Amino acid sequence: MCALMIALISPSVSAQWLQTTGVATLEDGDTETARASAVSDAIKQALLYSGLELSSVQTLTNGVLTQDHLSLQAHGQVQQMQLLEEQQSDGMISVTMQIEVLDNPQQCPEQDFISHFALTRTALDNPQQARYGQIFDVAPAFTKQLYAIMSQTQLAMLPIPYFKEAVDVSPFFTQQFQYDENVLEYIRDKSNSQYVLLSQITDISTGKQLNNDYAFWQDESYNRYFNVEFALFDALSFEKIWQKAYQTQGPWQFEKTARIDVNSGTFWQSQYGRAITALSEKVMFDLNNELRCLPTRGLIQHIDGDQVVVNLGKANGLVMGQQLTLAHSSNLTTYAGKRLPRQVTTLHRVEVNQLYQHSAIATNIGKRPLANIQLNDLVLLSQ
Image 1 (tube, rainbow, N blue to C red):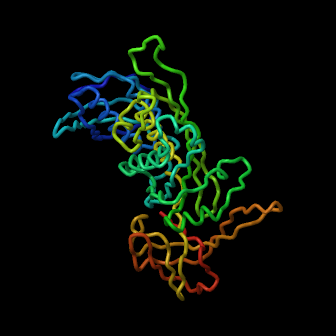
Image 2 (tube, one colour):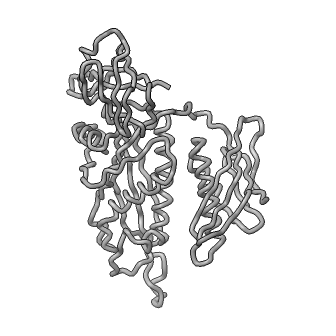
Image 3 (cartoon, rainbow, N blue to C red):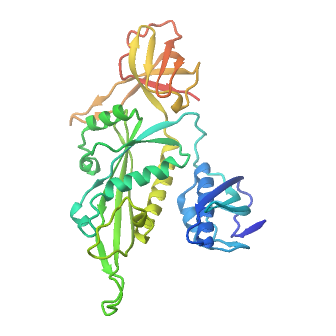
């Protein structure tokens, strides 16, 4: 067993032990780098489970891992860790770790239901900046990479890819809130999602040259920025519920006239590509912490007498016999013409008697008829 040297925190705080396994690819026989990546992966799994911040991982993995011990600087949320086992097989390395993490005081109760969010194609705000390296497809490549990272991790919500159609996202990032709610409604209906995530890359320009002009035998190397902002919307009320901007940078080590394939391993394994990957992981953690406490709600898509069809199913955690509460979605309109969401919960309850992957049929279990229930009214879930 290999103990990890870390700074301890007050033992009086409630904590829990988690056992996780991290894996990484062993490239060019570089065991130390692969082992460090596997440890990072194990820590991320623990932090995702406990709802902690990615800054913990960034601090924790800023250490040196050797065969005998791992020297790490602990962040406030991790109390102690132990490396239980390490294995190498078929070009992969795996580490099993036991990690003691403090209970997150802001963690919401465990949810039995899973909402879906539509992950839309990232927009490129300044395409002229892509000329250097001809990386005009960096936005869709970034979206696919972000989806790959999210889909390989158990999150509080399930990402639904919505890549085929480009979305004009610029109105959604202004301070005037003059975006078209019909766009969100369209994406919601096409993806069967409860939330919509929009994003735009705002800066991929190059900075100062990193090497010396007098070192003529060296290829020119420049620093390149990657700035992106995200906005998350409730697809039922159309409210913006989260927005955040991210910045990173990395050396652009390709030749000046090279045309770079942004979907290649060459790009993503470069220092610039790795910086973007680290940023994507930060986005994933922030988004997961934002989504984990949001409610799962559905819509009524069809009404037939005492039966309703809802757009929630097995994928959302519904089970046979599940009871649902119906609510009216009754928006208010201000003098300025702005719609404000309003939810009016009714006394109607229905019970699921037919269950499918992404939909369910539920029957009225009350004495009141569903005469006043309309299409696109809300379905509320109870734990």
